[in-house]
Structure formats: structure tokens, C-alpha cells
Length: 474
Image (cartoon, rainbow, N blue to C red; front, top):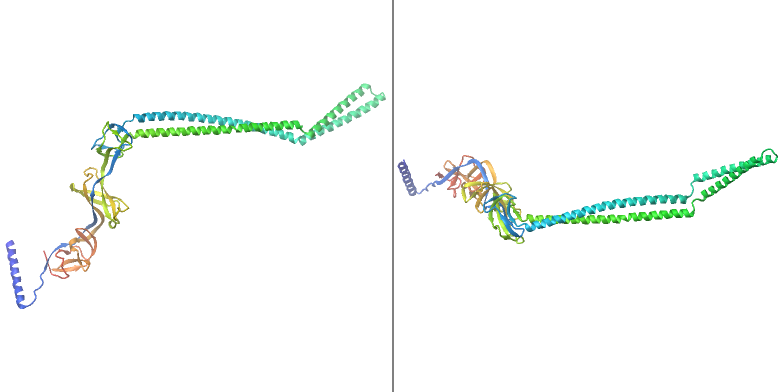
């Protein structure tokens, strides 16, 4: 079969050479030879746009623990390669001095608390005593002021009226007794009554006269009111009661002093509490705990060594490689197409047969100094810990996906007069189309118009093609 094809090919070549000689002899130009091309079918499939990235893997959490307190290392636990959990004790530094400071601070706090309780009791007692004294003095002053007011105002109208009525009654009794004595005395002169009746009437008259004099004296006293000596005595009592109230109110100063003592004692308690908290904090610094869950990368201290807190002696390095990431420098033009959460296909040189899935995690919003590039973090979950910090990674950030669209090999796109063009093989001729391009990657290009699915597009030999050229499909 191969020999037969070769014979046919040689015959065709001889025939072509003969025709060429005949055309040369006849003087007519030979027909242009067909251009040998390769073609591929336009297909309907998904196409995606990606942004290639590279970078060295880093642990997402990587910390170096330094000593915060000075002293001798009593105990050092996990070593290089050991897994640790957040909060796990890693190193202990000698705590004897810190324990003494805590005990001293606790004793000071107890003493300060006792002084505060005593000051509060003294304040409460002083408040009760002062309040009682003020109330008593105020009541005494009120009573003295009322008595003075009564004496200064004199008798009330009712009292004056009663005194006047008594005088009138005494005058009536006096007049009656006087008349009765006059009648009996006349009758005695006539011998009509005995002498003893006259004596009795005379005695009754004298009593009525005395009662009248007494009633008139009482009326005079009522009209005159209290004596000057009584008013002065009452005023003296008012002054004395006022002085007692002032003395009682002076106890408020004692209350204020007691309050100041309470405040001072409370401040001492606060100070003691702060000192105790500081001592406990200093002791806590001597117990070094892991701030993250991860693996010990390096342990730089051993039991018996001395560390310096002020110098920050490094003790351990711990990394969490459950997640790793690498940094990508992205231009300002590509930055507009990125957003957190975009999928990233990652390949690692050290594990060539494996494709890892990552995602855009952080986009630093400020350009790097001296450039217009922005830093983007690509995060990769690493539960198996196969990925290690320092490995070199290559990623493809997925920017966009268009599904069920017409795509052709990227080689099918050529430029004619500054615009993209595609040549389609039709009946041995190359027909130029002016497609509208969509997404494009290194392998394929999306055609939004100009070519239908299933048409054959020229992918090789199309560099110098023109519309209508004869083609020979290889």
C-alpha cells in the first residue's frame, strides 16, 4: 500500500513537471500552487481566564517565642518536630523570687483590706453620732425659740378677755357685798337684825374687796406681759441652743475626715491589688505557653541555661502548617480583576504529580514602595502537611469562566490590517473571517462571532494566507 502511494505521488510529480514545461514552452503563466496548511475543528466547550503566579510557600502562622523574664530555665518540654497545642506549657523559668513577691503582695493586700474595714466602721459610727447630736440640738433650739416668741408676744386675746371677765365678776361680787352690808347695818341700827349678821356681811364684803383687788392685779399683769428678765432668760436659752447646734454641726468635719480615711484606705487596697496583679503577671511570664497550635521548628534553650528577659532571649520557633501561603506581586491592571476567595490551581515543584487547590486570601491595598505592584496572598489548606515552607509553588488564579462557548486553538488567530482574523477551510480555499474575540489563554481563544462550531480553522500555514487562496490540508 505504501509502495502504491509512492508511485502515485511520483507520477503526479512528473505530470506536474511536464505541464510546467509545456506552459513554459507555450509562454502562459502556471497556476498558483496550493498552500499546505493544518486545520482544527472549532468546538463548543468551557474556557477560563487565569493569571499565572509564582512564589515560595510560607507557614500561615510562624512565631518565635522570646523570654519575658530573666532567670534559669527549670524545664523545657517539646523539642524540634514535636506537635504542640495552643496554650500548652513549653518552658518554665525559676519562680522562687516571683513566689516570694506574690506572698508579700498578698499580705499587704490583707492588711490594707483590714484598714479599710476599720475606716468604714469608724465612718458609719461618726455619721450616726453626728446625725443624733444635730437632731437633738435642732429640737432644743426650736423649743427655746418658741418660748421666746411666746414671751415676746405677751398674752393672747383670749387670756386678756378671761382676765377682764374675772375683774367684772369680782366687781359685781364686791358691789353686792357692799349693798348687803349697808342694808344689814341699817336694820341693825333699827334693831331688826342681830349684830352677827352684820359682822358676816362685813366679812363677805372684805373678801369680795380682796378678790376684786386680786382680779385687777392679774388683769394688769396680763396686759403688761412677761417681764424683761424672763425675756432675757429665754433669749439666753435660744443663744445657748444655737451654740449647741453649731457644735453638733461641727461633727460634719469629723465625718469628712472619716470619709477621707476611707478613701485613703481604699486607695491602699487598690494599690495592693495592683501590686499583687503585677507579681502574678511576672510569675506568669516565667511559664512560656504556645500562642498557636503547630510544630516546634527550633528550640534554642535547654534546662539549666540562663535567659535574659530584657534582651528577649529567643527560646522556640513554632509554625502552624495546617495552612500555607505564598505572596504574589500583581500589577495594578491585574489587581482590578482579583478579589478574595478566587480559586487558584497550585503546583509545587517538589510534588510534581499533585495539583493543590488554593484561594486568594488577602489583597494588600497599598502598592509596594518604588513600584506599582501590589502584594496578594494565596492560601492553601494543608491538612496532610505535605506542603512545607520554602517549597516553590506555581499558581493559576482563576479570573473568569465562560461556559458552552465556541473556542479554537490560539494559533488560529492571526492579524490582518491590525485586526484579528481567522481562516476557515472551505472546498479547498481559505476563507477569511473577522471574528469577535472573547477570553484567550495560551492554548485556546473564545470566538464570540464569525465561526460556527464544527468548522475547520487553519492553525498552521496561515501566516501569509489571503482570502480565497487555494489550500492543501495536511
